[in-house]
Length: 324
Image: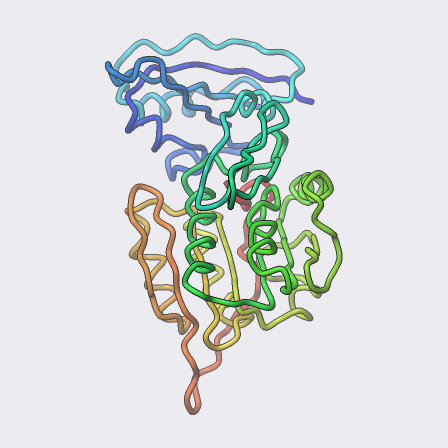
């Protein structure tokens, strides 16, 4: 529990969808803010963003958010002291259920979707990201569903920057004979993922139909090294860590492995694609929208190739490396 502050800014839908703590203009702040968007009038395209901060927000942060909201020269918003509150849970409370592919993601306050073919996951608001409500997580869920519908089969899966464990849980549902590892640099995310695994009936451990949870900076972890190579790799993090991790992910991928990347903005797509092409991946799908999900395949190596140098670490501090 921390001393929390918040401020609110009006904006339109486009700004509300693009302003997140992972935006390049905001991701450098430590700790980063938590930003929740809310629609107030659909016809008038009137939205608002609520910005929650651990401690009184610095002036530069307020100015950066105002600039992104198109209110650079307006009067600064009023800062509200919230006192001792769990501000991440507060920002995520009241989230409506999300449907992505066959998956229905809901909190404890919502009913299950009992329609045939729908898979329910309960992911409560908490101190980790990846509830399924951000475009990146929902996009990855839809991409996993599409892979299954196209007949892809996987046996060894890893979710880098798992956040709440959701992507690993979804992959295990689609390919129940597979083994899965879910990692995150943030120990809170691992604890939250363990709670979510219990509430969704996902066994923890290493073996078929089980998920192994581990704290790791990128792939720099003995469990990840021992479990390699992987035939399905998901990484829903940020563009900077994704670029840094390209050689490391290539080093743990079996030839022909499928790679799903998310967490990057549309304008960052080219730099991420270049990094993974250099590492030996073929781009199968470049995604679309403000937050694209990239799908790639690890090329089969023929003959001698210059070794890929990979430390396995993205060099990111805790809190900057986790799923949305």
